[in-house]
Image (cartoon, rainbow, N blue to C red; front, side):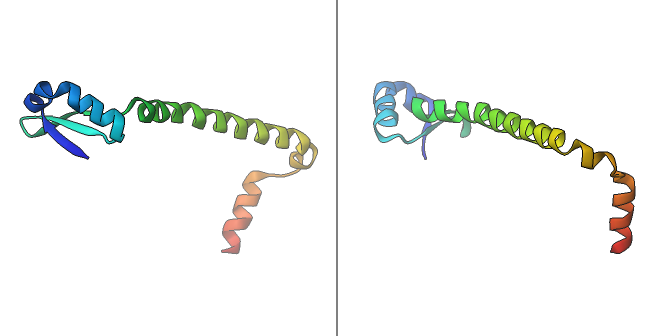
Length: 93
């Protein structure tokens, strides 16, 4: 990843934008030798921004499937005592 001081970035703004868009390489802009911002191509930003929505959708699907499974097996699950199962499992160790 390329790093530029803020003053150099100000002088070469157009060139830096073109380089980031063309080469698809992020650039870190620093001030006082400390990272201030990272300039990334729009496509990379959009794909990163979409990740939480994808994850949320997958979690919702998993929760729906668990609820469906629970509904299908409700009769068998009714007779199970979770506390007794955990105690039996611990005693077997």
